[in-house]
Image 1 (cartoon, chains in turn green, blue):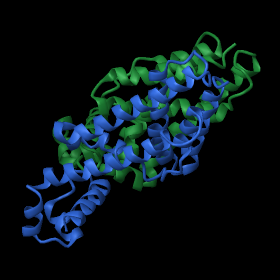
Image 2 (spheres, chains in turn cyan, purple; image 1 turned 120 degrees about the vertical axis):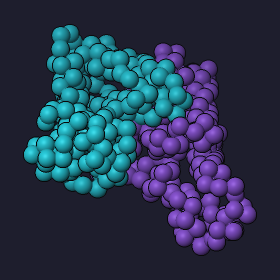
Image 3 (cartoon, rainbow over the protein chains, first blue to last red; image 1 turned 30 degrees about the horizontal axis):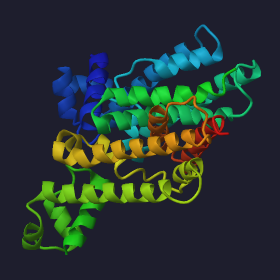
Image 4 (cartoon, each protein chain N blue to C red; image 1 turned 180 degrees about the vertical axis):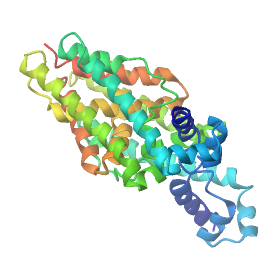
Length: 185
Length: 185
């Protein structure tokens, strides 16, 4: 039931945002009674933190699997950037930056901040590895390049939603890979 | 008073989203009476459309001034990307893609869609101009590159908000300029 409560909260946060996710809606969606909910969690903030932490952990685990996978550094970065994503649905962690209630609460914001901070640093390390191994030219700064590449994915979701067309997301990724290709030896 | 109603609606859409922007809140913020509001606008959707259209027009006019300004194509693109923006506040048009009520209404979504579609095409035209003039290498596809560059800005806002640090936005722009530089002759 704990598991069901977390999954229902993730869905509701996604669909309605923090303010629209009432304890009552969580109970209805999960089929948990009020007693069960307050047995497992202290309240809505506690449950939201568990739901957000779960999304952040999944995002990080998938990225880590690709960035530490087989192949050269540039091949791994390409695999990470090119992974198929549900572009119109958007990023479950990135979207939280537009939820004013999540951003205003330091505890709820922390997993969002940590995930993107980790991702940018991890990607920068793989770019530095590519440069050290001679696969990437010395020009582009690894940290700035990493931030730009993560931004392309997050902004790709914005542009795909604006156009109601997942192809726009794919085009943003293609554009980033094309720019990167000019620095690959 | 029409002007004041539009500006108040823009502020409220920004702060509270469409669902949180009640006709009563608009009247209070603008100092307009109910009669005055319904004299100028048919209702909240009509007023929201005027507010969103205003934001879209401003965004487009600023971009057009930079992209058709003085200097070579790459210099104009650099000016456009490097313009100082309120990174933690975010893009008034891009943020609407996260407002479910705006995205669900074809009339309200249209200015958002048209603005980004225009921006990507305009940037692609300047990139094509750079390529035709020999300033940009033949490698990167102008349309895909343009989409990636617009995505960097939109994603830069997401990352800056996640980190609560406007410097992250600046780093994303630096990274994009660094990647582009490898293709400039």
